[in-house]
Image (cartoon, rainbow, N blue to C red):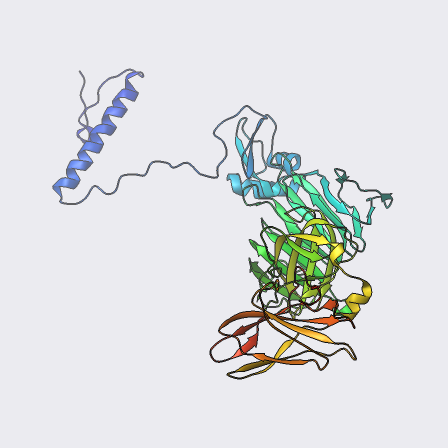
Length: 516
């Protein structure tokens, strides 16, 4: 055995095969020596080296060259011979310039040949598009559609709508489109939109939708898009509203230079901005229950939406029955107008009629006798439409009365004065016509407390005890028969005061029988 004395190291002759084993043994000895040395010096060996951790957003571990692994929000491509970042970017994103973004994401700094089998992560935002289509789920009335080539096209239930199609709805006309991911686009009457973009991302099938609102309004119920990085936007000439899953409305208010944009978020979140400034610092995010007005120059503040109105209480259980010409809702504080829509389904997808009025009494024409669903909402002084409530309702033309009856219907009474013993109610008199005031404990007027007949438009009644009461006025003919009746005015009596309780309401049988 030969020895050497250089630096005190023994040199042992060994074969090439023995060298790895010797190196491993030497490494172990060195580690043990370092540990003992640290302990002997009273110090610490330090924290152990952390094991390599997998990258959560990283590409799949392996795959055949040229294959693709599809994730929820990205894909992984496994390079084949001859691939470069530019060729991959052009193949999957349609833009060769995206090679820079792919290089940063995958830690490749040069556009050179990529080793075969290398996993390349491509996020959904960079993937190219494929054309998509929308399906007509519900339609009523006059709907006009112009195809992308400028030709007129006829829409039908179950039919398809393609990117670039312009759609117009006429009076009492409604349309609902459903996208591949079950998102819904609903157009009310007197609206015009163009489906500016209708595509999906390749491999992920995540929607990329853009609706251009040109007139009226559009209501969107968007399937959550966070998981698949989808995109949905409603644009106007003045604004853009972008979402990733929510229920919201956009409406054009006014015309010309005075046009304003109302955005109302019913659920989820919507980012709104003036057109061309979607990334500006003044972009406003509206959460559920908030709305805002854009005037083309500024994004207004977030405003609380009004609560959903309710139809007036009706006797009995089940459906609320109204004359087919007049429907009443309970007034909402802050409301300047109300919108009523009639639908044949509980989700109000298949709308058949709508109206808007400044009072809580709304008139619907052209609807046949039957059972329907009423969707009603309140509109504030800014023009923002609040939450909508949907209730089942029965319309009966047989209860509507004649046009003369409607014009002759008296106004409901209101509290004029009150004291400890009496209450005085007043209403506009009808010249030369006898009228009867009725006071009841219920809105159906089955439990009458008193009545007065006269022509002066005023009646004084004993003050009832604490509670809620209803008063109405009936117009009588010469024989005492009832020609028409007002809506019922609820009012509240307390120990200290008497006051009207909201707006007048409709009554199930408002035309009472003679002598009642």
